[in-house]
Image 1 (cartoon, rainbow, N blue to C red):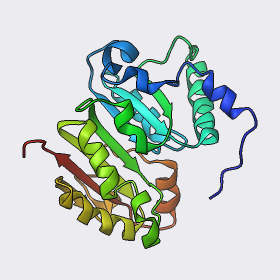
Image 2: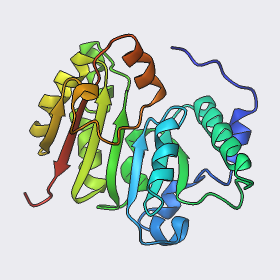
Image 3: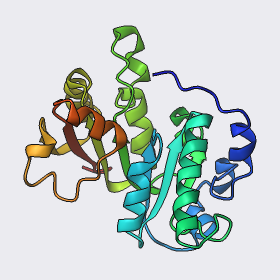
Image 4: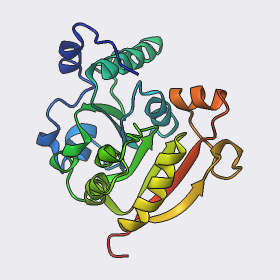
Length: 227
């Protein structure tokens, strides 16, 4: 679905205290320089409107979270929603970033922004399936991107991936092990999986697709650097 550009969104995102404006400057220093804590850092790539990561940051206040989004207008809308939540709590974005920050950029540059082993966990939720074979390398679970993730994940770090697209999921079930990840859990119907669905946070896409009767698929993969 094409996102209609919001005039002024670039300036808004560029001026937001919630957005890490030059992430390359914090490579290897996020814990102390951005969050001021030694808490593990977890990253959602392609966060969309931010429903998932906002809820996750509320549930796990002792974890640091970064939402990663390429589309400026989408990030702008996510920021406005988060700021509205803060306002309801009587807080302002400038003083209440807490354990959640955002980066506007392309996931191809992850290794420029994060040092080796700096990220504890990565979430991939309803990524663009890029169904044509010629676009396979653009899939966020392609071997190219998996190599980026392997570099920035800590030893034993996890990737959690959800999608309603069975073709993309089948592809991913093959690419993860081929890249050296171990599949810890695989479900082809998450919402009817009693164990894996515990504590599940529904994204906007997930709610939409599930309401249509589409099964939601999920996998959890671990990367052991010396395994």
